[in-house]
Length: 168
Image (cartoon, rainbow, N blue to C red; front, side):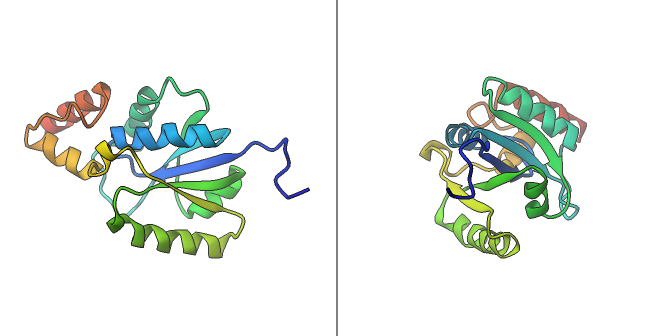
């Protein structure tokens, strides 16, 4: 019998900044939820980034946006993803690939993670092509310029973005 017991739950981590979550992220979450018993959407607390939303605000938006998917939870972490994955008994890391330009960076990260933990698998998922150009930076910029973001984010995210932009 292989190391993966039939009774063991297959847990995956989908890490990211999610500042804010977009329909592209949600599409990846839905796809991952079909492949794994449980998916943890994990907000990476990156000290080098200045996020628009706090971790708590992002967690709230993510939870509201994925409330209909039963096998998903939301968390945050600092430090090495590999250590976080071990603490949560994860077997895989989910990464979204929108375009070829994403692949080089994601491949490097996957290889580093494999070097740190050979048991942790990186699974690359592509969002629906209608989200292939979408990222949080574009959404933030559009919102700051008073652009229509209805087709890029759930309503709760749109409302929170509009509130943030009015404060700036």
